[in-house]
Length: 237
Image (cartoon, rainbow, N blue to C red):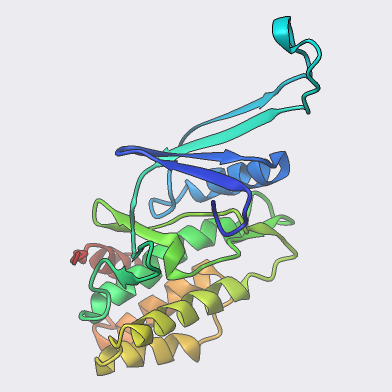
């Protein structure tokens, strides 16, 4: 089950099925996913099904009282998790985001792009948050970092800053946890983001671009910087 305790997750070699017990959570996740899919860095939806059944039986079940049984499910692409967990509660990072400053910038700029669509929402008066932007809910596929698991997302009044703060804190925490926060440039980048005033995904992307201009090359255009960073390879462990 997921952290929300209301989803059964079935993982297959090429796709993932998520079965929901709550129609409300199903509809919310479906809405957020469709918005997020505008980004190449948000998990892609393959299909969904919503079935409401009636409390009818026949044959030998005529005298058996059954509660109303509904079925709600999503099918998504399968991605590689950034953090792998084992039954003995041990976990480890699956790619080297701590060795190369540009790789960590890639993580922030790509997930920032995914969050920017969710935070903008479907209209000016509707903004969504992810609700749990930790490294546990980020994976990678085909050289891209990808955001997933929107079960704790919710319709916001426009305040999405907590998603950004949680993302930065989770990255710092996990690098410290695995004793990987040794590179001075990695610390510099995390401090830069912690001291920034990012309130949404778009501003996080802009902060990474500003950081690149300050420490790498200030003469490039924003889209050129985005392309350079996003082309950085992901080195798996």
